[in-house]
Length: 471
Image 1 (tube, rainbow, N blue to C red):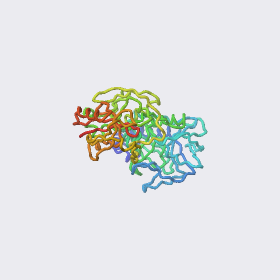
Image 2: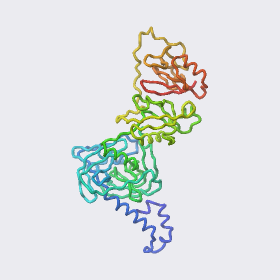
Image 3: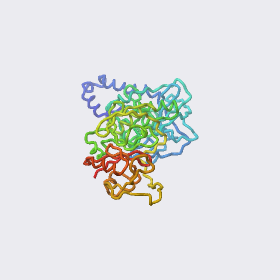
Image 4: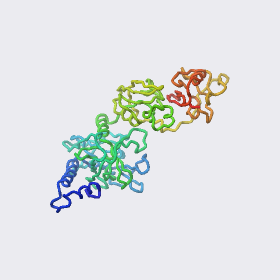
């Protein structure tokens, strides 16, 4: 450690009486800190491993925002030719299970994976399982009585506490750097629609540190180093130990990760200005934007347009809060959702399901070209003349639905178009009341104060969604 790394610490030490005396009289504070840092390395380093991935061509890691990199790129954006795609990892069980990053081992070819311990021993490693979403992977070597890194509780880690990184940057194994945890709960780093959470640190980490441990002052692993914000920018990100540990346990047990889900697309109330106007009494919560077909939520009491306020009594302020709570539940577990609907709160139960491995997020996909369904002969199709706020409706419910009123056309730039309604939508509810005909819809809207809008529940291509109609 140098005083340049911690200016605030230098100021404290240099101003102390001990530092003003002869070198032999340097007080216990500096020596204690010195011994503590050295002790972290001595405790953790034997459990840290260097990972070499052979037989794979150099491959650029893609999918991250500009300036944010996994640890295999140089300042010019090209892959860094680390020998055999070198990375780091650490032992999590005496019988040879090792944690690292998914991106360290994902390109392993016929040459396989080799793990080297601090004592110089080398072992061929097999991939037990790898999870791209969390960037966590588990390897296994044929060995016993290996030194093990102990996990810390990442939820109790504090911003400002010391953080230590150990790894093999630039083919320099067992490099030890010191910093602090500079932020927690970074949840929008990769701009992914799936749940993510990172610990941010200013401990120096570079290409080759991937998969290595981020430790606390007690020598316990608080995170798994995963990303850096560009070379030499001083910001790194680690997967919290609680998340990494839970992922590794599933990988060791089943070779894959099963995640709970509800099957809904959501948006935080604070992220939608129009919704804030419709829910003037709410400042926090998560809106159910869409309910996907063939999902746990589809046949439940949950509706599009509901605002989720709590999960099992725990308050939900943002989308990430809801994602985290649902991911923490067991598959098939019943959760109690407190929701806001029709200007009042209610509680419903919903059983979680298993998230499909290949999940196509509705918020990410482009809408395919709309192909109208086959119709009967044109003479049998009767449109009611005149639109309701730009909605042209069929005089009878559409044959594809047992209830609701079918939207034949939506006039461009009309209130209905602004609300997001589309041709072939089926409106099943308006302002909390069921509708089955044009007359039903007209009556409901006539009796509703439209100054803040009326919520319309919609079925669209098997999906349940909503729109807020405001003249």
